[in-house]
Image 1 (cartoon, rainbow, N blue to C red):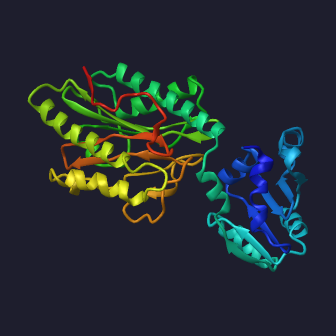
Image 2 (cartoon, rainbow, N blue to C red):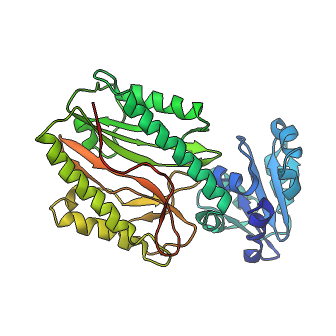
Image 3 (cartoon, one colour):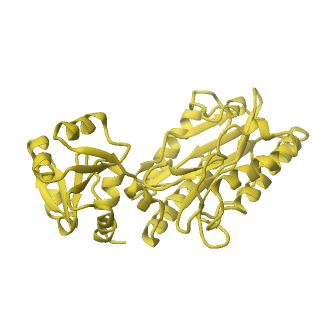
Length: 354
């Protein structure tokens, strides 16, 4: 979808005396392709403006942004905003607007209405976006396999986190999608463990939750590696792992157009409950993915919406056994008509290493 088409989709919801004020960096990037530190958009009925400061003038006026927007190079943002909003009474803005910007609009005499039209557009990915996310996933999968290949006693969680960031950047990623969660042994029992200097030991279960960002779009994968674990402990871990894997498959039956999103979360929990493990599944099943690592909607038991074709979600059931280990399996999926399309190729089976 071209930038002009994206902007034009906002027109129907604008009155003649209204405007959109768009300042969230991800929204700005989605509508303009701009990645700098200062860029704002004001769009009115059939007229859109891109506002930035002199630092970006050369880059913006010679880019596709100038083909979609009237460019405003500002030295006084408040004065420019006042001029662009002249004649408007209502300004629509995302709930992510900063307090400072919200108060500035009020001070200009505007009524501010919270509106998530841009996020609604972002929920449905076009073919170009899907291709980019697939590339982000591919880089991510290669990085996880690379981390597995360098595991050895004494390497730290922090070592792996740094290596992940280096590897994905070397293979084309912009950056990591978020601070990687690398957890050895009992640290894996904490779902959002802070990566530490803990050293790897033989008989550790390794949990890697990491993401690569490519051309602005995120991926998010989790894999578990059994490092030097032998029977009978390995058999117990494998049994629990298989249950989480099956819970994921049960949830994915609902990852299809028209299904209630909450039913996927409920299905995973119901399956784990049969084996007394539901109480150890302590977070939601997943979340939408795109320019931000966590986008709306969330795949939780409280979500009232339905899956729509073109949405991209993670699916990540897990169990966390206090002071023992954690198991989480996560992949990214595109919602289609009847069954989800997995956006990667890496098996979700337990990885045996060492």
